[in-house]
Amino acid sequence: MGVRSYLFFFVALALVSCQKKMAMDHSVWESSKSKKTPSFSEREWNSLDKTKTLTHQIEFKSQRIANIPVDGSYAKLVQDQKGVARYIEQNRLKVDRQAEAAWSSLIEKYTPKASIVGPSLRSQFSALKGLTIERPELVFVFNESFLQLIWRALAYDSKGLGWLVDTDLDVTKYQMRRAGSSFHETTATVYPQGPKRSGLQDVVIKNLSELEKLVSPELRLTTATVHKIKDSEDSLRFDPPDERFDQVQVFFTVTKALDWFRDRLGVSLSNPLDVQVHVGYPDKTNTSFYYQGRIRLGAGDGVSYDKIPMDPSIITHEAGHAIVEALTRLPYENEGGSLNEAFADFFAAVQLDNPNMGEVAYLNGPFKRTVANPKRWTAKTGGLYHDSAIVSGLLWDLKRDLGVDKTLDLVLKTLARVTPSTDFQDFQNKLYFILKQELTGEPRAKVARILREREWPEF
Ligand SMILES: [Zn+2]
Image 1 (cartoon, rainbow, N blue to C red):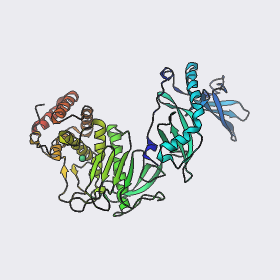
Image 2 (cartoon, protein in one colour; image 1 turned 90 degrees about the vertical axis):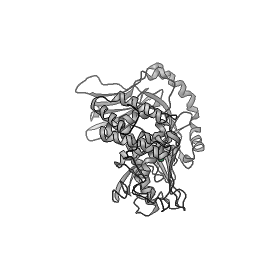
Image 3 (cartoon, rainbow, N blue to C red; image 1 turned 180 degrees about the vertical axis):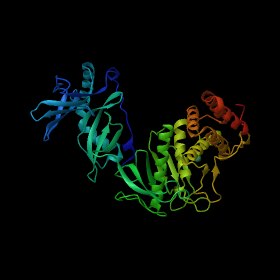
Image 4 (tube, rainbow, N blue to C red; image 1 turned 90 degrees about the horizontal axis):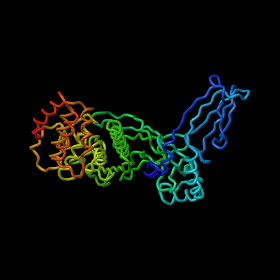
């Protein structure tokens, strides 16, 4: 199943006038509290099913607007054995007649096109080619503030698993999820903090696609080796040095990093990351880079690097570039590149609570570089990583003296102003602007002291 199956789409309909009046109303009625039984017009409410129990009769209805079902709407009517209404609970979207008329014309226009939606989905999206797609229906979907009209179809894959495929009226994007049950999860064996700081452990990996291993809404992992993980595999429990272990380890570490960025910074990528491991196979390469939504990792040549997939700092650093790119579009060379590296290192160090980069994989020393460094502003040489240490070192000192939460807040606010043309000077201006805006008293004095020690321009 393609990465695209997880693209979230929003079909903004140009019916602003009716959006304002819409709200999903939840209400409860009890016969003991009110005599007047709510009525349900046949025009608006479609009866789904009735079920008898020993004590009651239960009926469910769903709401329709202009004869199209409203996703998430329901009415549950409970009667006693004599057929007297006792309890009613409902979720109903309020729509006025004028808005309904506006929707009706759109519905009239699209209804005849139902038969071409399935073939159109299959021909446009390679991931859907093998699916049997049933005739789709128009559905209203209510998303907090606005109402969308979409196509929804039930589809079956080659294994007979059922999927719900939602697509916009003109079939330009789609979203798909398992019909009936929620996401798939499985057990995997990993080093949660990398092999130097943790032992092998079984963890649960959630949100996996059931069709392909190591595909989630956030990332899709592939390998250049011939040792691919079979879709029929029951779990993701492999032992190192099995190459499949590396794939699982990287998937776990990238997922953990992206979860951290979402939870701690509120930042999520708009597109899933495409991650490939064992790049260059069968050659062992020292590749580790991020570019335009892709992370590429080699195995390590065994001379300067080894076990790159097992190094959490390298993986987390690369995932950090994706976040920095989304926020700033900083380049990868010159001063902007050094800033880019500094943020990626700093975020990795904070997440892993370890200032040292490359501790697991780097062979020519205890680590490749560290954010716990005293490098001064005045030591700038133009070296990409040399200069990145000037900024990552400052951020690490801020974290030491201001605490993680405050420092992340300051960094995030500064990143909000950083652009592709930001160099060290511009970064310094923007950082100082935020520091002055956000800090007073003792914290501000602490920061001034750090900046002075590190020979930064006058604060
Ligand atoms: Zn980097």
